[in-house]
Amino acid sequence: MIKKQELLSTEDESFFRTFDLGLTAALVALEETIDAIDKGPRSNKAEFVFKRTVSLEQIVAEYWDYDLAIEPQSYFNALKAVKNRLYSS
Image 1 (cartoon, rainbow, N blue to C red):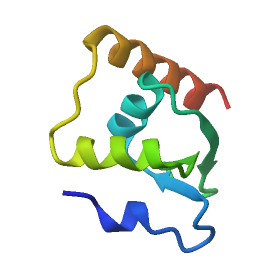
Image 2 (cartoon, rainbow, N blue to C red):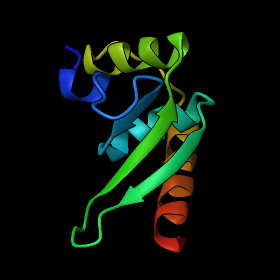
Image 3 (tube, rainbow, N blue to C red):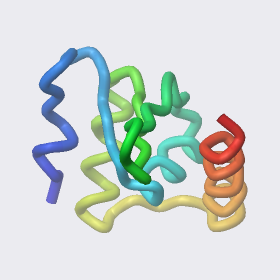
Image 4 (cartoon, one colour):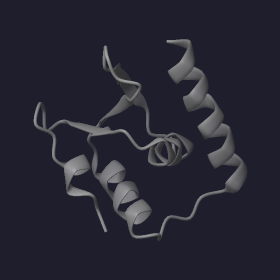
């Protein structure tokens, strides 16, 4: 099940935006690149921004359908890298 609010962007359809840290780690582990991290000035949430591609949309669909296969160490390493980037910026 794809979360529609994440596939639809109100600002620019060429970008995919998500607040989901687990999804972001999966995308990074599968070699998608974070283009930006938007942190709200009064929010403790960060929004991850990716360029929208066919492969990215396929990964997102498989993630929400519980169908994504990923190597556990790659996922864990990607999660650490995303957290480091998030907290160092």
